[in-house]
Amino acid sequence: MSEPLISKKDLLVRYGISYGALYRWKRKGLIPDEWFIKRATVTGQETFFPEKLICERIEMIQAKKDDVLLDELAKELIGEEEKNEYIILNTEYGEKSFRMCDIRSIFVIGKNGIKTEILSTVKKIIEDKD
Image (cartoon, rainbow, N blue to C red; front, side, top):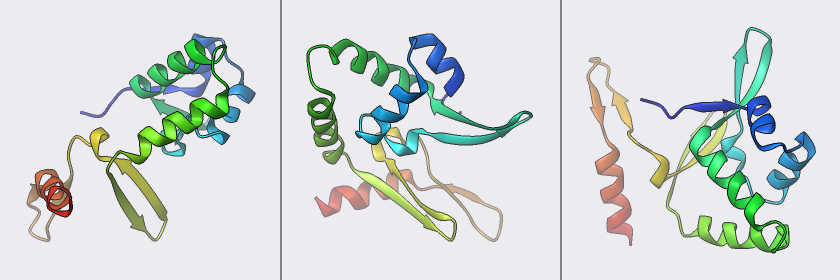
């Protein structure tokens, strides 16, 4: 089951933040690019976010923004992100990275149609590299 998403519009309304603030936080590295998910909707293309991740991050930014400079907060968050392990998928459509702690499963479907879960194998490879 995939994580629930929240639309950009609903996010801005819920937290009373502006479009400009959201994208300023993105530029400063407070919100990772990969959290901005573009999806086609009946009204066109909209941006969505993993609800739990983005809500926790915005609440943290709002709680700290009066006491800590955003650039300092970004350095702190980037430092934490660098400690994470990632998997990177590189396709003809571009590259996308995912934090290992956010991945719930990875499947490979062979020519025979059999679906095989490989997340534990990927985690073992990472452990063996450390």
